[in-house]
Length: 583
Image 1 (cartoon, rainbow, N blue to C red):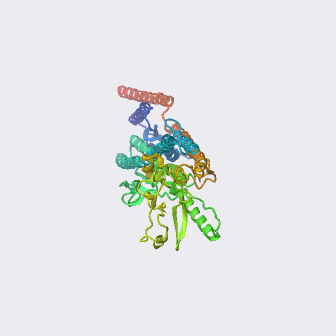
Image 2: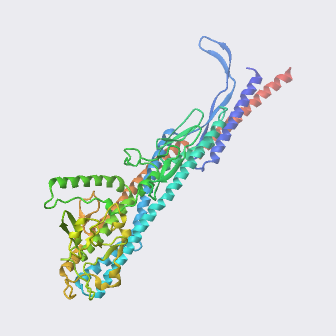
Image 3: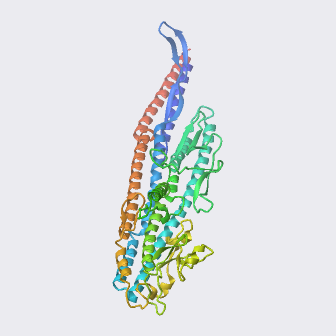
């Protein structure tokens, strides 16, 4: 090798060492930068000069060193695992936050507890059972009933408002998914252009893209891959989100034409992003992403007591065929409850809370204004039971069967109308036909938002019916006894999944306990996932993170290499000078 060639060897060493020093300094400068990936210089032989051959090998001389690449040191396996577990943690965390909101509305942990309103009302019911003829006790009952109803309606409205407000969070997350997709597309273009010469890697741009993929993994379930040009394509929920040339936008639409709730949709495909018919479980690998967690927590509609099916009881005279048909219908509705209502934190709270208030209201109404079934012609009607309905103290009317609670838009009774059913003409004069609740008509239901205190009783407490006859002197002890026993009488199960039939007090205790238990379960899963994600991130940071001790060691190493190359050039220069001056 000539001395001039040797100079080139020294220069290549200087250049390589300088680049390595720059990369090391860049690592040290970004030691605290979030998402920064440690960069590493890979050196390779520049070329060889062949000058002979022997029986063992080719005789050749190296012509220096070159920088083969400046690579990022990170693990693809840890990246994918981290993004999956972060998405799963976000799915459960978003639901846990919804549980916390619901718990706060009932005020059992702090604030005014709803249980206090129930206790006050129950105390006034007991007092009325003891002193049914005392007008001041009746007044207290009506006032506490109104207070209970106002508190229940305020909570139910909060549940509904929070459920609707989740639309805003859902829209924000959809918007963020689209922003991230556009950001990944732009970075793909920059990286592809920057690396098109095949010489340098756009490592800092790759860090930006990886940060976006980390965030996107927390929002929605994604898969991705990188092609030979450095372009990353992303699939979200099985649909292309970022391709090599374009992005597919996510939008939102109403769950139904009459719904207030929004759902994410693929704009170009006009299809839903999620198929919520499949249970969201780890086994199905579809419990991923805070966006889906919000949708599951919110549900697809407002819940009420009609969502909770009541298991049929075989009564005397009921045929086996009728009972089996009723049982099959119950099982179908129970499956629908578990599929559509029970998965949603908010819908479950709405339905179970509404069932409690519905039970209290209808049970008390049935004491003050009892009904019975009568059959005339070929029809059966539910009518006011005038034989057992108590009377009010209001002179001279002594109103019979006035209910404490009414529906806002539907009367309790109507007069017979043969135009509706010809058999109604056969009913005795003065018969009051009960207008039954129709699950398809919200205004006919004794649901929280449709209940009000009977204005007749509210304006005149003496109309509250607790007298046995029109003389307004004898108390209806049967009704008073029914009131006193009401609170300790089992009325309903919490859900189709609960076998125990609860009293009103036990129902509310179990209701709040189930919410708390659900919150604990979601929080435990979320925390476990957070620990798992953190452990994975710690492992990938051990690979991709910058160690100051290691980088300082490299700094010294490359500094010595630079000095050695410099010294090598000095020696070659001295040799050349010696030869020139001697000639």
